[in-house]
Image 1 (cartoon, rainbow, N blue to C red):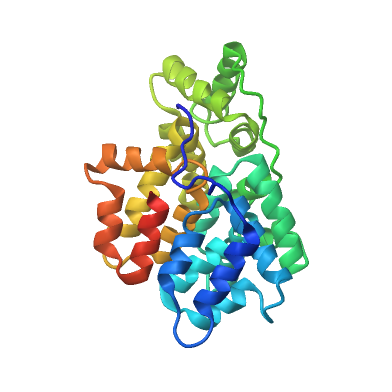
Image 2 (cartoon, rainbow, N blue to C red):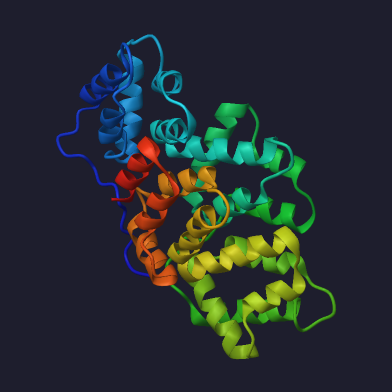
Length: 317
């Protein structure tokens, strides 16, 4: 899978108070200096942005950074800048809340965030959710989903995935056999076996299970999931398998989906770029080009405009 490479790197000689002052100055008085906002918020890592947020609060300008940005900006540019000023776990917790609380549920967002997440990301998100909304994320997920999909998400929200990076081929073979017995080998499906293995085993282990399953049975584990599950449960399980095989490619597809077709899904575009720019957005860019024979920058550029476009391109490096 190779090393994760971000597109945003720590600013050297970083001074959060100086950045906070510069942001305040950019928004003070008549008009806003959007270029100054982009030059700071799009060129700091999430830890640095969190420090700026705290420094801004401490400086006593009368409002916090989020409120200041909201009162000065609008549209997608505002949403992007606000996303950048929040701690990443809080931003993701808000995204999950939005996916659950609107009219109907946005299952795509729940699948993307929870099925691709690492334990640490999910645990921090749980804590942020509890702080923001006064009850556990799990409670809202249970209230808003049902059936196999609910059971899968509830398993994932525990953040209990094994983190041992070593792979025992014998254990992977055993899991592959259990999955076959629970699905293709019988009439009906023992769904809990799929959930417990796909929600709790390490990513490298799952990669091995996928390969063992194919070797043993001559058909893919993906095909088994499609045959045994439907709708959201199927999409969730397939996402886990995609992330085990190649997480960068999964996000490249998600970005392409957000950009391609009629209109842009700006919410998804912002969430993925903000969520991944500190982690592996460089790898995702490479996968994007490999899959779609176009650069992600070119597609983002062709689909957005103004300060919003400039900010996204700055984050894309």
